[in-house]
Length: 167
Image 1 (cartoon, rainbow, N blue to C red):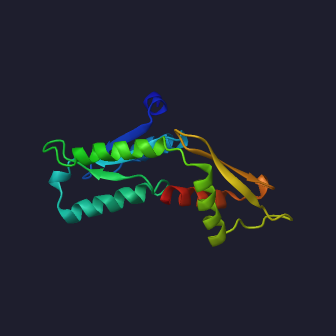
Image 2: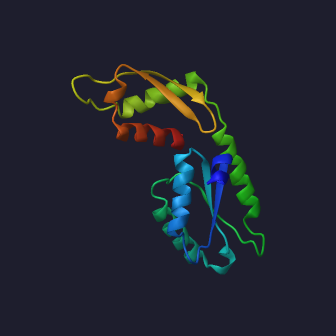
Image 3: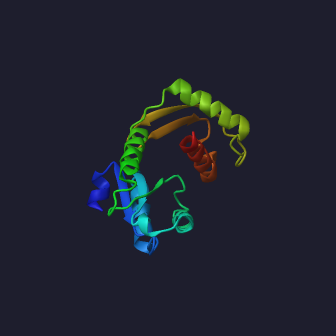
């Protein structure tokens, strides 16, 4: 837990033959709660056929349903295969973790999101979102200025978060 709290990027190493254990998903859940960047590494991939690797990915994605954005990398400690890709992925995830998005770019993105799906009306007032700005990096934290913050449902917040991650 202390390691997760000190880390910027949490790399979870799993055995694809045994699959992700319950403890593995708990570790990633703790990392997500603390706002850490995450990567799942399936080691011993040299022992798997292409179909078995695909199945291992599928099973890992199923266990990671709470964090579908987490990259999965296949490696082999024995042969060294995939290790370079792992370090490239770590660097990319770290850069994204520390990325600052200019307010203008963020608001242009947010205008598109509002056109596609405006926030649903809850109660008597329709929430209006005036602008969005990034308050912090590591983890990236965004603030939306609105007329009715309590009227924005958590599912809409999750939708916007997922759109930000996708973009």
